[in-house]
Image (tube, rainbow, N blue to C red; front, side, top):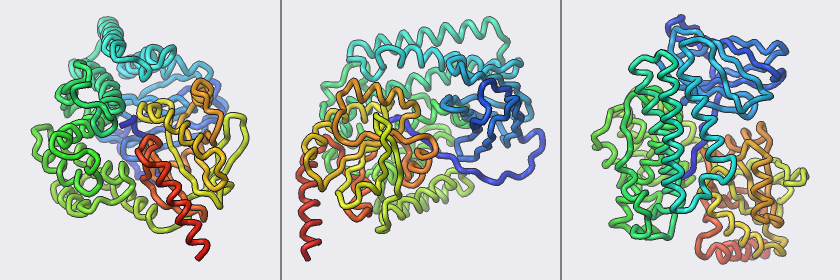
Length: 478
């Protein structure tokens, strides 16, 4: 599965004592009028518009050491904060590659995390993208990246004073980060539920990859972004591999995977905080992954709430339940607008009267990239059919990366749209998206037919679309 997006909601915050909050003093250059957002895993966010002098002070509620996401313009980074402390943070929006800079000793661990982020961006994305590596390149590339990060960590530890716990966190965060890359690659190209390749075709480097998972309560309780991603990938790999041994992979889906996987995770020997997260992910993935409510969802969710009566995860699960129900309640699909590669604006409502196949993807999503040639083929098949529109919606933050990918992959036909930040936020909220890829079908009247339709490479997709067109014509005739 691809990397995932967690969406943010503004909540009213009560007053907190100094010990239950962290104070961040920002000094931002070249950012007047732009947004600064601080958020946590549970969608609590503080948002400010950067003033002309660039100085902002934010007091954010935290009761324990935790990772928070700091976002300015298109630069986002998960950083580590402890309650009761004040951090001074410098950032120049004209030099985003330099990242956030912390000036006091208590922020040196974040300077390390930012340094690692810059190594990753340069190494994995500057030249040949990591998802373009072949089977031989991948182990060598990841090992080289790990060596570079280890060297950077050794330098920071030598030149700064870190506690034993901070050093453990730095090492564990690195391992989680690399695991998330490896597991995402495996899910995209070798997993039995996302690939036609057999287990015998899996390179030795990726075999039994789920057994390398790190179960770390320190990272979990701090809500490390890298670690939560690694856990999500681990869950998808572990249950998928197990089910593939005994079950036809074409029949496993929303009706039975939750009941098969839930007891396995419930009884797994892991820290309790990790188990709670894994079960939470399993519940949300059973909805978000399939865009529907599994038949056995209610029973398992009740079991989860009994086991964790004060779980914070329920505040994420409950809204998702309502959104999924709304997607299937025969209401019009939410309108949105985006620009094509030439800057022309299109709205979903422009395609009313046509059967709309909606492809949600991103250049950073390995499964999406894998599907792209099939999407182009599907667009060619319906290129001259005036009753069908195939819309490809990018979740990319950087329009230049999106444009470069389209040009490189000869995407001259079909409608490829990029949504600016505010429009993208509205789109992802309206369609209850947690990442990519997603494929949806909207009828000519503008109503959602299927919020979890087939991917472009699915066998028989062309036939299904033609049958839907035929049925729609028959309904009109009647």
